[in-house]
Amino acid sequence: MSSDDIVSRADSLMRRRRSFVAASTVQLEDFPVLTDPVTPPQEFDIPVLTEEVMPEAPAAAASRDRFDETLAARLSAEFAHSLERRLAAELPSLVEASLAVLEADLRRGILDTANDAIKDFLARREQLRLPLDDQDNDPA
Image 1 (cartoon, rainbow, N blue to C red):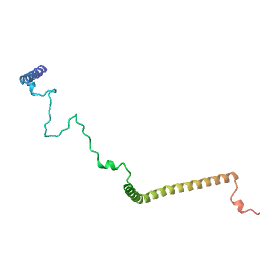
Image 2 (cartoon, one colour; image 1 turned 90 degrees about the horizontal axis):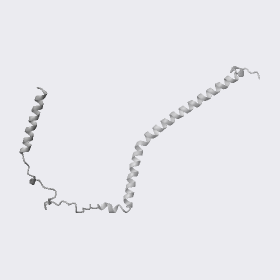
Image 3 (cartoon, rainbow, N blue to C red; image 1 turned 135 degrees about the vertical axis):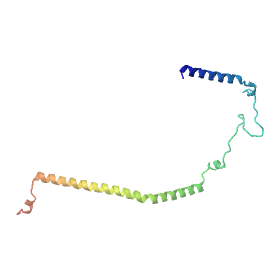
Image 4 (cartoon, rainbow, N blue to C red; image 1 turned 180 degrees about the vertical axis):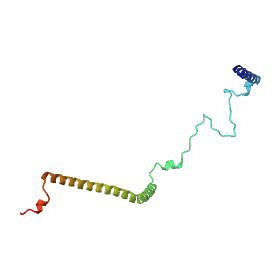
């Protein structure tokens, strides 16, 4: 099929479609116009834009204005109990982890101090160049 055949078939399809659309006539009187008043049916209670609808205030909002000591005491006791349970569950593992870190730091500190002391001792011995056996054989 050549490109001229494809174009002619497409053109004939478009003409056929145009003739179908042109043949069906639509009456504009069937559609409502924006200037026509539309009244809602009376059986539905639909608020109109000119009405002001105020939301109902919940009853709990009025009681929140003043401080309720009983409620505060109950909430604080509940919070304290919840905190106590959480600490009882997690505190042993937190202490254990902290002690493990402290133990590692302490070991590292002791080893570093001992190594420094050994290095210092050896450095002083090299400076003096005293044999260790001379002190034992001293006649004094």
